[in-house]
Image (cartoon, rainbow, N blue to C red):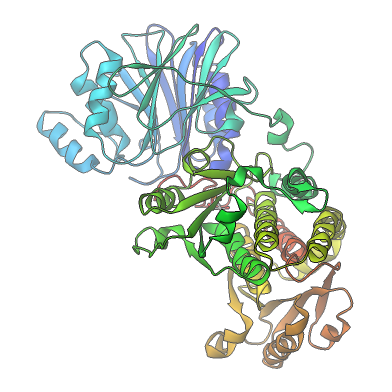
Length: 608
Ligand code: G6P
């Protein structure tokens, strides 16, 4: 959600800025712009729409010469997507220019104050306030000026700033919005996220809240809000550059689906030692694990769905009560956190604003917090008491696939570990679960290779208007994720229902030709599910089922069946999700949708 880049160094800035913005496209945006300083003037180009337009406008950066610059992809919050609201934003005499990610919550108050002082605004954004505020407090010393506005701004911000009077200096500062900086050969880069800088450096500094960075082509200095110098350690990023490129696939989403077998293996294998599950980074002794009274899983979007699966698996296997909540609800409902509650925050990006706020609130209430995070060094990873990484690598498509699959694996690993320590499974059972876990990557591969069957089916339903996903137990959890995948990228209305709830309302929406996707992988619930499928079918629905190999009885209640290979009752989500991901993907491709960058959505939701 909004992407920031910046460069100062020996090379031309514009092509580097445009390249970086390209790498951040996945975050979601509706307009883009860059500003480059050639030592005489700060030139700016910005436009509504895709980056392609900006590339054309600037002849791939050629028309903006200069070796220092900032760039931005905007996801509108204040003011419609338009050329004038796009970033960067100038002060009136064009001597200060900023790009901003986040929301200045008291911007109206600040704006009115500045208007009273005679400032004129040309955009509807909260960001323009920052440019004028910098101008108002500017006293020739950029660092001091930045600290002054930090004391006056409320809300969240990551800012890239240039001052005309300081042609060699690039400034960056952050509060509650992600920002990283790194050295390149003969320069420095700033960005909202790692993929934008991978081509230039693997050693990055994660800027903490209220830290300021001053960069020149030779130096990088960090300061606190009191203008005190700070020492910082860099973090080495293992991801390789290719991982953030499409590598011959038509879409990142398809590539990332195909990366699932490896991502799953990378996530579980370091934590399986012989016939045991060892999660060193948990930071919990066996006594601590035995003392857990309740687990609260908090997350957003697909990560929340992984948490719903986690509830079924943790309660089933380890017999620990689990609550799952979406972070935006949890953070405002004053949850009861008793002694012995473990809060688990799941997040791919580690930057989701609501999840981060939920984490902070849980810590204030005295809970121990475990983060399950994909992006190393992200805010949630840093602020959680302990962090268990999912090793999915960079995920670019807005609709998550491989990161979600790794979150499921993290849930299984936790359940197995807790169950073993608390004695709710035997050593023999644990061994079997481990064997099943090790089989998942090949089974996922097999399902992916069967994609044509799903594609054929999807092509028949390109015109669908409503699709319902139904399931029971963990199959309800996977129905939620399958439904989200479909609606995010194909714009077809879709809902997931606990199959037993159908009769309490939704069945009234079923009519001739309505598509229902039924997931039934829980043997003890087959019969119940088949009854639900018959109910919708007799009302005209067309039913596609996803079920276990060998459940031939399903054929009498379904029009189309996809079989998944055998695993235990807790791990079926990892297999059932594959045809559902493929279904969403092929419908979106068939409808000509922008699969990797669906409208109105952002990969990393860093504002509330
Ligand atoms: C956005 C993304 C989803 C993601 C959710 C939570 O909505 O589009 O794919 O599941 O945010 O993000 P997180 O980074 O916290 O997992």
